[in-house]
Image (tube, rainbow, N blue to C red; front, side, top):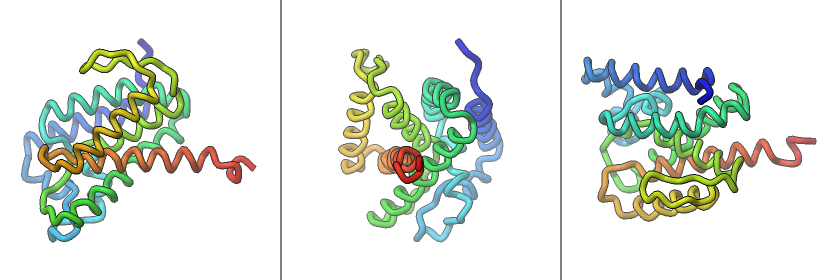
Length: 193
């Protein structure tokens, strides 16, 4: 197994570090969670800092597993600069979509987690390696990466409208949107010319 590239390793370590810090000092998390615009607690830096916080160990574990599985390979293909750009674009677009969604439904709950960035990496992986076979944990059915991404995206959309889980499904979709827009920009004919 190849070692983790620098940006992926730094993001992973930062998420674990913040998780440990806020386990020791939970009151500090208030300032870094992504609060809805109408909550009175929203601060501009939260559109980035929320990605380093996680609700519990399981949330952290699955996000870091996704980062490890997808991030290392994408960083090796794109290099650290472009890979960082996709992480930032996914994180910011996930925040914007989540803020719009919480405003539309009148929610006052904060959002935390790197899931938006991870879903951006998932979409990126599907676009770069569409025919690579992926075997998810549940259900363990081999499928092409492009099918896996489409199924996951569809599930997120359906679950987002159900609003019963407390999971920020629209933030996940926002992360996918940010990655898609940035990759489309990179691939545009005008940019190549």
